[in-house]
Length: 406
Ligand SMILES: [Mg+2]
Image 1 (cartoon, rainbow, N blue to C red):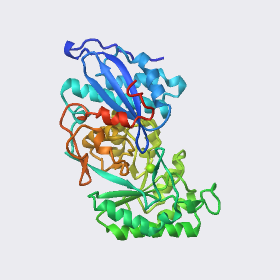
Image 2 (cartoon, protein in one colour):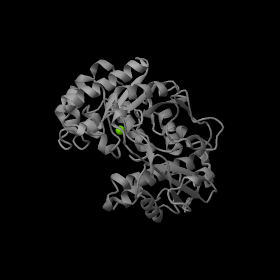
Image 3 (tube, rainbow, N blue to C red):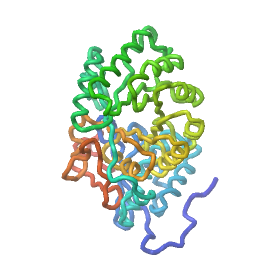
Image 4 (cartoon, helix red, strand yellow):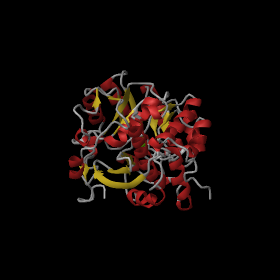
């Protein structure tokens, strides 16, 4: 097995630093937010976040055995070490990469704090001072919090008027780009398994998109997410039906595994097609980007391998003049990591914000101003990610009380 431990030992003594501990905790936001903290013998502590859901904290705990004692400044080598050391048990993809991702983000925070530079500077420099955010919206009462997950309870809320009203409300907050879910309960009729959209369901979707477009006008960018639901024929019919509404993108129209089918949809669609949130590391984006299987690539930087890996994916997209708009359902911690990424990627367009219903979103970080203002997040100029966790607020929202960074 290739050995990715430290073989380059000639380094300025000021940067001869060691990782001393790695801790995790899970916050219950609208998703389960996996936070990661890396301690060093220089007294500097880095904060990161892995994509939501179970199993991640156990994997982070497992990885401590080959990270403690390592130099946190070797961020990219350490990511490769995590993948290599776990490659026999799935380390090249999936949850293991997601766990490594939260550590990678925390390592960038450490590196920035040790060198006195913001993370975007370490990643290659800045193209923009603020990062545009799109707001993930939910129609009417179709979405509510229940044990941290969404609960659909009222089919009337899927009426076009409900979407239009919510679009208007969110656009009035200053967002210049919105996204709605376009998969609906009616898609399950008459058959919930085959992915074919009936004419009635297709027309209902068209009416929803038309209502939202009419409500906010053509100045607002609009995207719709289909969550991998449809068969190839239905995907093509849906794309054709939505052509008049000049969408920013239509997302995940077909299931995610088959890149040939994805390319078929993208090449035949008059609407820009987005996908990428369930792929890991540059390797799983190769055909998608080089065979023009996507118009807007949407990796999730908190799951796909971290900031360096996301930058590599963005670079491959840029080679092919493909726009990069990251998926994001993180807390403000992972969101700010994405902001540094957005600052340093030339083909970046817009970053997802998916926590409109979390009323303590702005309280989780110690800061005076709201994070999002006028649909943008300012790129921090302070070292590292430029954020400080409000631990008292975090403690109030722990998934398991008493497990704060333990
Ligand atoms: Mg999506």
